Image (tube, rainbow, N blue to C red; front, side):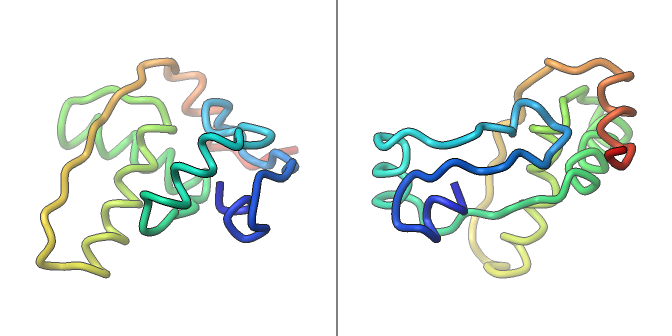
Length: 110
């Protein structure tokens, strides 16, 4: 989505994330139009931060979530830093990963 917003419309992107549920090769025109119209900002979270977020959710909240949901932790920190007095809610979903998937996502690509 960040590439589409920068380009002014949907564009194909090279997938670099090991987190497959975050790895869409492009966005649809409809999704792009809605995000452009309704979303204030799009954050890009590195794989390592997403994996760290999954681990933090497990260790501190007892929630098992895949790294695609773990990226919310890093994103939330960014939002709170930018808007410290604004309310914040997170919808944590996704159990589409097991421990091996999270460990694999934590490893740098070969």
